[in-house]
Amino acid sequence: MNREERVTTPETGTSGINRREFLRRYGIASSALTISPFFLSRLEALCQVAAGKTRVFVVRNGDYYQNIVKLWEMLDGPARYFGPDDVVLIKGNAQWPNQGYTHTGCIKAVIDQILAIPGFSGEVIIYDNTTNNGQPGATGFDATPGNRTHNWPDHNWNSLAAEYRARGKPVATKRLVQGPWRNITFPGCSFWNPAEGEGWTRCFFTHNGRNTYFSYPIFESPLSPGRMIDPKNGVWENGGYSGRRVRALFMPTLNNHGWGSEDYAGVTSAIKSFFGATEIHIGDNATWNGYYHLHSASFTQGSAQTAGELVGRYIQTMYAPVLYITCAIWSGWHSRTADAAETKTVLACENPVTLDYVACRDVISRYASWLNPDANNNTRKQILGCLSRGIGTIDPTQFEVITFDFTRPTATRLDIERKFREFKAGRASEQDVKNTIKLYMEGDAP
Image 1: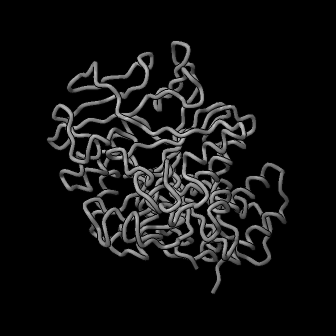
Image 2: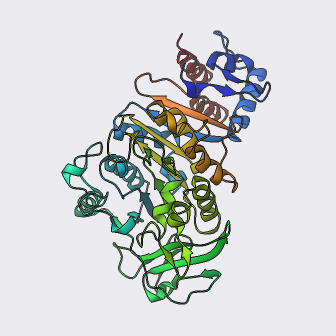
Image 3: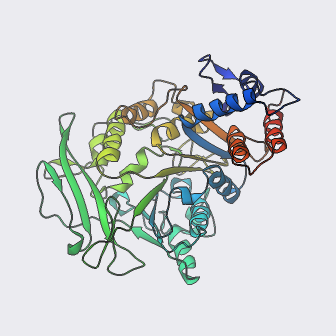
């Protein structure tokens, strides 16, 4: 049985039970199931308990496209997160070549599903910032074929977006650049006025005794001249905010931040992906007027804990994505650019803490033990730093992992819940529920 299919029950508080035991305790593991009142009450209790947990969704061993399509199915589709006229920002990791930038094929699969939202009339913009502008020809935006090892060979992000536009689809890229500095308040927040063109909203404060600042961009849509994209406040056009929403989806990689061992940060994935949502290209060690940006504030201290704390604060005070999808088709266990394992995995969660914990524990630490988040290492400190700000959970009684594996396809607890809801609504039969439970039980191989 897969590790992810072990659960904790509210009745016993005991983890490590398998599928059959899980079902038996709810009185639904008989080979001669009947939809009795007892059965219904116990199954409804199961669904209610599960609904209160943080969930990480994992899909394995399909190709990049199959994995993403199945992941969206498990998430109840992109329409759960995005409206038909939203501007959707896909924040990838662009800085490094090969597996160091977010898998372009995964981004394509995500975009295809978003564009398929009925009546979609919004925009999709792939964006990121890179330290010191990155190395030409080696970023996600412009990676040449020689820099696409362990990635999708067909396209980089720019050429992918261009292909969509050639077919009349509203997809573009936006490489963030530093904006002008004016109207600054120390300490406090200086809010950028979109009427002045592109720029950055910035907040200045002290964190652990160090002057630090956050920023987020306000930029013109590459698709609609005059339309300004504000990740926090929505779309600005025709002299004001229109009420049209901007929704961010973060799509990080899963790599060792060091080189053959753990460095100050540990893993680079969902939490650390926020570094590229801010101004960072003025240098790893840079300050402006004595204030450190998000990257330099943690880098100069060599502190993964600080990195996590600052990201948690950023989520709470600047803007927050609605969803995170980790693209671990290849995982750079050695580094971001060399020696990767083909893990064929994608994961999704609505917070970066639980997502990074599960991705490190169940995916990359199998190849890089130094990234195991259950050890006392920098990966764990980064996660705990973000957790300390009230983001996510790593308590096994408060989250569960729902997994689909293409090499051994079976039903999940999610499928049981859905089929049960359909039964109660009159859209499924008693036999449909029984068949789903039977398929779920058959997944518990000896």
